[in-house]
Length: 413
Image (cartoon, rainbow, N blue to C red; front, side, top):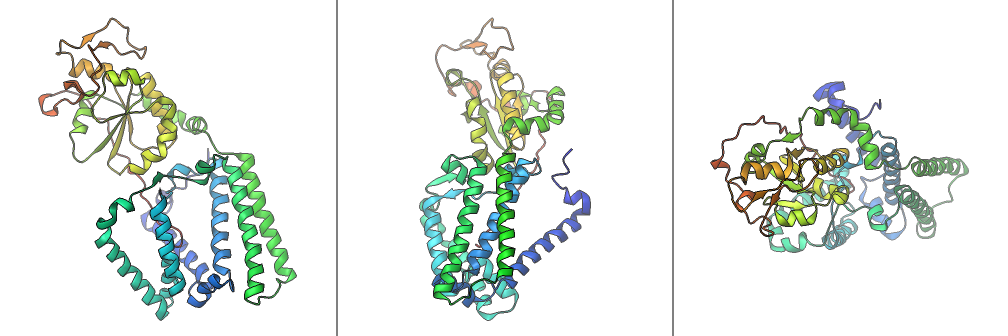
């Protein structure tokens, strides 16, 4: 049994967990301060190639965190799906980066380092932090005028692995080697433009040890690899199979109908049947999602979800929907349920009084649609969107919301 994840609330209590968070934040701020990140002239010097401390410190933090994250993920200690990765909006990101870069050069701070400077009561840091807050206010008051551009070129939760189509370990080694080359190049620039001395031999040995450790960690990421969806399911199978057996996640059509009518819930319907059956009949608002594309859709599903989101997967019966449920649960998508009896059961409950919809003699359990439609109606049928007020159905409520972890900030900004 893996000791991870560490349930800090259970181990130290709510107040104790927040104390640990405070210590981590203090340690991060302390490292930035002793690295000189509270001094605007030192920060601005990187743009003149005289002092590359910012590049070296930040890239060190990035590559160390990267190696540890993917090593922990490979060992099963960490679920990468539960880590917030900022979604990519390409052109707004480029424009925002240019604006921030100009501000960095002019003011000598980025938003994060200005807070470090303000915490040490430096006047320029305080003014920069106040200016940043005013900029946030100004942005909030004007964003509606360029909202289309602000939400353009959306690529979702895009990573280097997705973009390059390479295994995680290869990307990790590549980024580490790139960072080490930049460290070396940065020191050459410091000596050329800033008159920095050659590193002492003692410091060089320390750096060699650090480089060797990083490379060893990156190689270990390659050797360990990253868990597949099947690997993740195997770790959860004993617990989650019990839910399936107890029928704890198969919700009655009546509960689904009531949930769709509940303004407090965001119900996302995922139809994993064949496209022909989907076109023949599907629930209104249901998305066509082939079973072989469920895993690839997980990052986008997690991005669009709020704490009140419930996912309901459906097939003609339950077999394909159950497979989709396993994939989603293995990839840590919260609040996933199965439509009990599938579309066949839904039509039995809500479409039985329509003479245009005739049942077939097809035996249940073979994932075939057990009703005949005169033509492909899609969601243009009364059973696709029943009126919840016209039905009083008895069922045992099973939906229990598991709170979704929210986004957290990060980086220099």
